[in-house]
Length: 93
Image 1: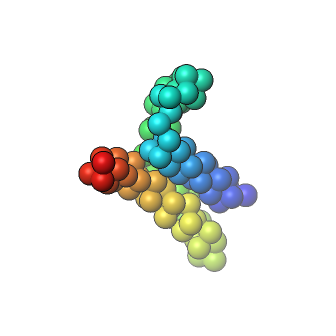
Image 2 (image 1 turned 120 degrees about the horizontal axis):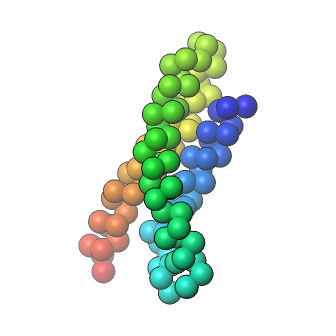
């Protein structure tokens, strides 16, 4: 059950950052207000999530370790999206 919750949170964070990097949210006042209110929470949870997943991964039994690989991979990919998508997006314009 914990691994599914971590997976859904990781996917939600990935969708949040992809949406904010692809769509110009400041064209829409309501979306930009929601983004401004949730961005600090999203940044903190994006960097805390891999640590939490690693803790659960190391504390789980041997047969249960594979369930935590997907949330860990998605969390690392989300951090890479945060770092490199703005760079590639601005280079192509």
